[in-house]
Image (tube, rainbow, N blue to C red; front, side, top):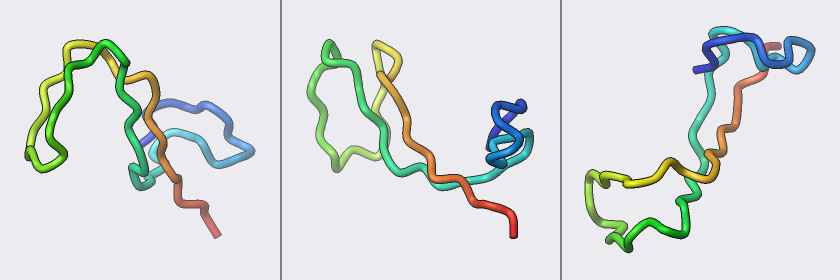
Length: 56
């Protein structure tokens, strides 16, 4: 959920909801198994992709 208005003309605004589509980790992050239920990061992700739902 978006928590502040970023681009209101594109519906990237407060309370917009979406689906997480990808998390790209920092290269310094140690390797992990994708089967792990929880991964604790040492560095923030490089970026996170979210597909927002557009209003009709």
